[in-house]
Length: 141
Image (cartoon, rainbow, N blue to C red; front, side, top):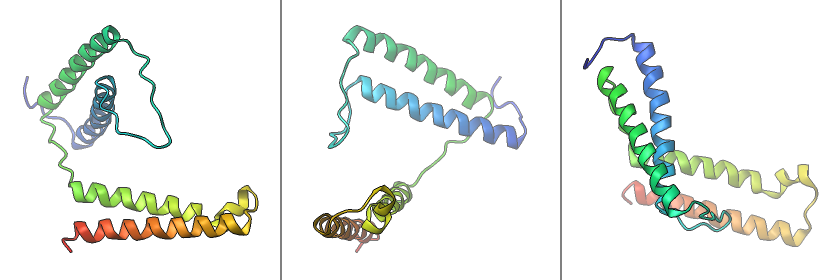
């Protein structure tokens, strides 16, 4: 049955849960297809053999098909996400993390010597400038 009526609150809960599942399943597929971005601090080790990867991918594809059936049955709208808005949110998260790297915040973990304080301040300042540069680019400037 297509487009079955459902309370809006239930529809929203379904959409939210299914969206998270879709994102996570798609991440697994990307990982199994070795589409992992190059990382500086997080090295993934491919310990899934090709047969396991293939079989797992097939099950995940079936799971995604099941999610699609929910979408059709309850007439769930696609969530359209602006790439610029998504990048902006991520930049805010990074900015908060940079704030936490400042030496005055590090006191909770122990004191840094002056040389390390100076280095961290310099690098955090440079990274903040790059965040602002990204913001300017996305504003069309």
